[in-house]
Length: 240
Image (cartoon, rainbow, N blue to C red; front, side, top):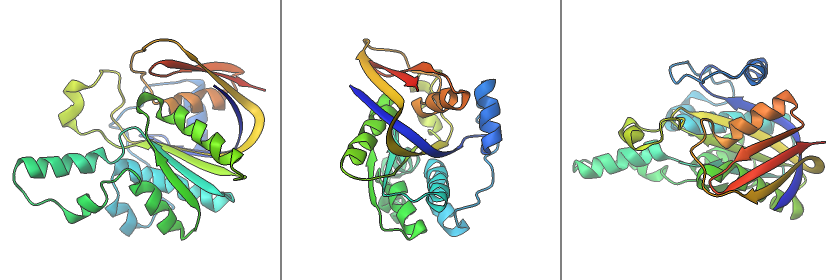
């Protein structure tokens, strides 16, 4: 598969990283993102809404609101590999111990919870959808962005995120899999500046960074060509 895009704006958050200057420094001298590093204070999201959201959704809505404030957007796509896993784990734990399930957890356990809260917080009537595709969630999300642009939307906001993975699951995860909360927001237009082609490469190992953060690292460095590894595909990027 081949497609091309242009990035208009971006914003990201992870433990110890929030400002654009911090991300550019991290991209030039990549270092391990430590789960113990504090998340920066939220500036877009109200405290009442923030308290209702889990760690990943909180960052995703925060970044989404910043993009909607700065850019005119026609459609929004939220991508998340694990979605509301924190909340779903609490539901399963309550059921396993014969405790009452929290109505809030039940109502907000769906995969499009963050996307819905963005439109509510922004009070914006905009086309919105959610997507999940395992390791390749970010790259498959970009394929959806291309479809939205081809459908006539002029500018698309995509937010890739995940929340804290509950410790219960850690023994069963690959050691290099990130378990901390992050969000990467990107605003796209149709253009030929960033070009991507996918090729089958057989099954690969779990990467040490989510695809969106791998992409952001290369993009901020202005790398002319780079590769993002997926589960059974490699995505070859070039920057015009």
